[in-house]
Image 1 (cartoon, one colour):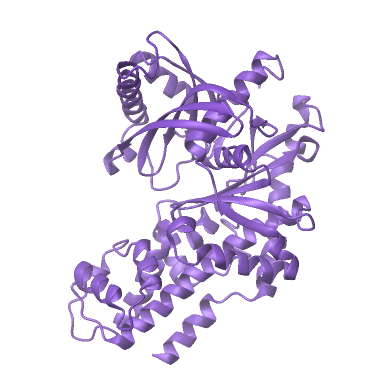
Image 2 (cartoon, rainbow, N blue to C red; image 1 turned 90 degrees about the vertical axis):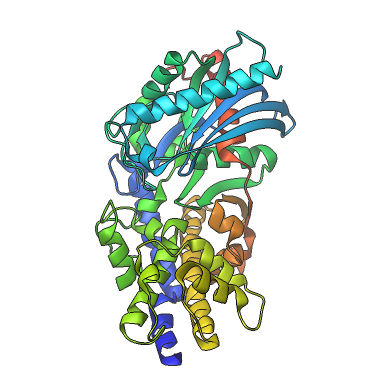
Length: 458
């Protein structure tokens, strides 16, 4: 199997030189997205002006329509970087993700009504009080002001018709008024922007936020003078605004820069959005298990593994979860007992020790490439903003960053391969909760800004 492993090492290993080339191309994409609308990496202005002071106070609702759950929170900001949070989660079915958009938002309204009723009953919220609400909607939207957002396209497996091209805040407001929910939507943000703001609220060294989970994205604070596409709005050029990069789209359509293997191309071509989200398809939790599954299926066809066994279960697309890669990489036993368990329990397959070691080595190649590509994205923002000398902290969140063994270490190793010793100046840390606390802080900052009459039309 050593020969086979060498073949995959060649395919999945990225040299520092290759990484630096990707960083340069990535930087160009970021600049292009800031200069004109409708680019591959859209670089969406969020209308979140500047950093939080850390002294924001008050009670806010936060709602997050995520990839798996609808999450509803009551957040009390106490100032001094401190907060309290009460929350509930409601599971989204696969059907709900595909049925009409009106129905999806109606479900959101129902859940929020149930939540606000329960906190009124428990005495956490006084009756008849209308709370400002921050709505986290982590799908690419074009925003012309902070409480409006037109859905550009669904990602993360959603496909609800009758939603793309519509204002999701308006749809959400309609469902709130239908269900008589005591809330006023003041800000629409994505989880990544929320993560940026929440992480800075608690740790003011934070300059960039990234999500590495089912999807992947980044946000950072940009000077308004360096966002040519909003020059017509007449905002003070010295002001700062958070940018939601939507960087999962980097290198989409053209596929000129990223090291795609035939397995990546298969995933792309059979996905519900072929050609799109090229960067995300190489590094996000939604796809890593599938990359490894495709490799294993090819090895089965070549007669290299599982000879004479019935392999129908592992031939089902997306049956190999990315969590399995985490378990395979972190198996502490000599016999690789966790790997035995995965293959026997989920796929009814017997494995030899040599096969298990081989599969673990493959998992490592796929996982390491994902982390090193993630480092390229971070490096592009660091390089563009000139953060390398003084260093900066990157708030990172998402299941890959939090649960995949060694993912953070490999990002740091990647940053040093790109920047040399100075790469050590860039550190990632576990981010604060962007879709809960971050969304509430954004709502607080927005309310304060509008009460002061600052850019109240945005």
